[in-house]
Image (cartoon, rainbow, N blue to C red; front, side, top):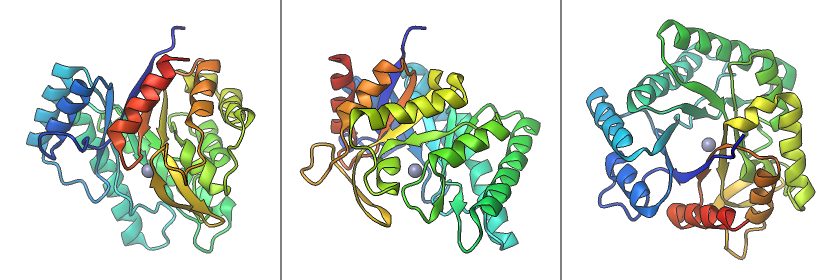
Length: 278
Ligand SMILES: [Zn+2]
């Protein structure tokens, strides 16, 4: 299969004419990038009317869209109201995202709190199965893409999300490589470490590598995991984007690479041009 990798920004590029999703999509196109993630991280505030306009901009430009759902989601909450709100936030992200023409809905699944990881897995799996059913009933054509998270206190290691996909195959995943690196205090050091991530995904389900949703950025971390994102070429960053891109090439990965560095468009362009030179 011919490799098809799209590169884009997490949200509207800073250099857009105005700070709107539509201006963002147009700017992404002008920059020569391919994709944009709509950031619903502080709540799904976009109206259906705006979503219809976003869809038009998407169709006119051919820019591929995804959605990042609100941050304050916890599908492991024991509080029924908080759990209901988490479900609601994901579903609204799916509904509005689908109207925009987005394909993947990214979210951080939840926190362990004081529960055992196996109980948390059960809770989150059953919540996601319920969401998948609602999406099917409402005929919303988006993929649920729980993301690998950056802190060991958050559910969402690569193993957990791959196991979730094995048990609920319609649940895909977003692989945030900077988060994987930060989560285990800097585990992605050499080329072989990046290769091992893709090898593990391939072993679980090779199809995943044909349309993988990915996040990447420079990152600052401690033993407690992620602290903040950095630009790829920041001196304090030790996440090696060239090893990352080499691995994508070697495993013939297709899909979307969303850049979450502070300089979103500069680093997205750096990733795209570096990949083209491999
Ligand atoms: Zn995220």
